[in-house]
Image (cartoon, rainbow, N blue to C red; front, side, top):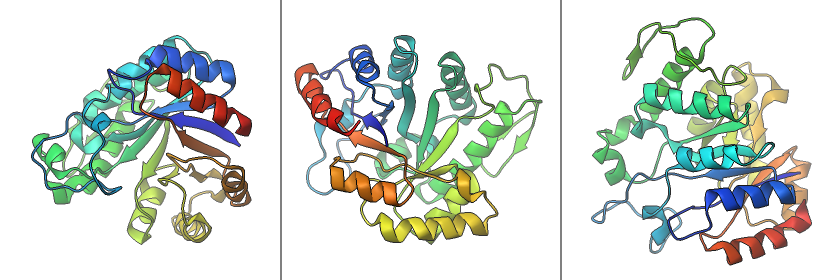
Length: 275
């Protein structure tokens, strides 16, 4: 089982450089970073986990800049977003950021994609809330057009780009794309249509949901062997990892605390037993 990690890196936590070096030295598989551009103080969107929104949501570093630092001081560590709020980005700029990071890191990048939960944040970016899923899918299609080997145009419902020279290209032609979201037919159809796999938060109920995803995947004529399910923000235990392995899952992303260096390193020491 490949054990990657995720953390809300902020101005008060361990730094990207220090964490990336520690992860690679200890043999962890990767580092995934979340993003929020800002958190409006006046909001009605509830925190999905319930209770008070943790302060790190409004303090997190820019994921791509932090991952660029991590890439520069490592050679093998996987790099990813968990997740990128694609609808809140200009997709032409985002395509360039993704391609540059993947190119400079030698193909180590995974683009984790999400639709978002914070309506007020999205609306500040000009996103009409009910359109966020379709905008995300359209943006992914535009980015793939810019990553294509030959100049390729895209004319979608929300985004368009002319056939263009757009370099660098991602190292493998396109990065791995994992779609996050709650299990269900609508989400699984989107995974099969637009992504290379699913990032379920926490990993509960996968014994029931993974077979349903595989059915949707095969219905879309996707290669069954190509599907990737990567449980995200997991608190690892031996029993949990064994259950994941029985489902054919080969990678999990373990949650690290949004904390200064000593606490993060203690958590890595604890998680190292599962490597």
